[in-house]
Image 1 (cartoon, rainbow over the protein chains, first blue to last red):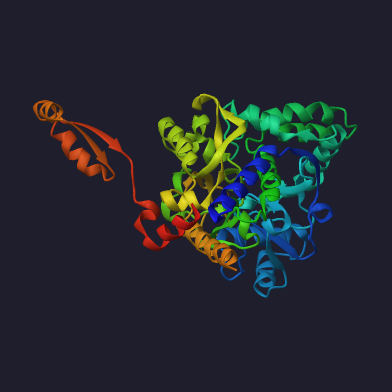
Image 2 (image 1 turned 180 degrees about the vertical axis):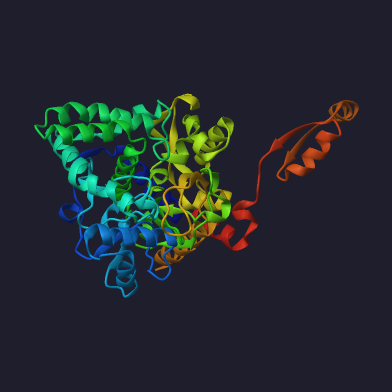
Length: 418
Length: 57
């Protein structure tokens, strides 16, 4: 078998595993109880590895917020000192089968969605999505949503999910794609579908009425609730694709506001990074271009799994948040076919005549066409202390893919000659 | 062949423009019909990456 034949066979296997994935929400639980390797005085963050010195302002602000949330520090100054002295460890979510939106920070007492891929038996985790702390705001008001999630909503949702015996996410995602969601920046339909499923179990939970009412209100009115679930489902889908010998399929795209990094199946464990790019889009009133931080978050795991920007053509409603036209959105989704292994048999887009989304990013095709994936995302401030300031579209640096391809050639050409 | 060439030269030509769009735009502005074929050299014309792709893709 030639090297090209081995790569093609490996990529077909990667595609098969992605298509066969069956992500099911099985629990909502504290990170310390479920995330492998989670421990005290550890903050998990989005993107490839980064030190405190190189960390961007928004992610620093979020890390300070987690120190206050955990009670490790009395105020922001004390937290900043602890982080600067490396008294708090920092590790990427992706090294723990986990993903997090924007700064992505997770500590022991942060409750997380627990999603099991029933086809392969692996589990993946994601924290709640909100609009302040994960963008670098560590104020008391910003942390209030984290405390409510820990003390009220997380425990109630966990009990409801367990009482239902789990909630299969694949059918919810498939239906929401046909209701105008793309599963990254637009999760309005899927969040409502999730609220419909979970509401009867919450009502029957026997929990205090105030907690049930608060959780129902949270689940029924949070426009980004399902992003945490689509991210965990995408992570649970992609982890079994890791480590397939000779595969050139991307298994993760993640950013920490300083670096953009990708990982590749046949080069498992390695990161290929380049500076985080600027996001092009729309800013909320009062903000200027120079306020914006660089691209950040693990949420590009949705594009890695063939959702998000890859499904943009079916979600014209998102354009109010990101800018652009419906024709451009359709073109983005069609363009992505040129860099993918195939089309999803599960996730179909009505506006594309019910064809599946492009799925399985092949680094060879990206480099050949000089065409990088399209990602839709939110924008954080470049400095700490602010909530969300906008949203838009972003492209990874091509350099991540050329570096990965060069490394792939070194590893596999050498293996062939040996 | 002669007849075909004759027809081609007598009629109004339709151009096929491959790659750089600006060449086709000029013809279009001059009133000709242009069919655009999107093409770019593999790996943006980088010979080292093109050589890698020869082996891998």
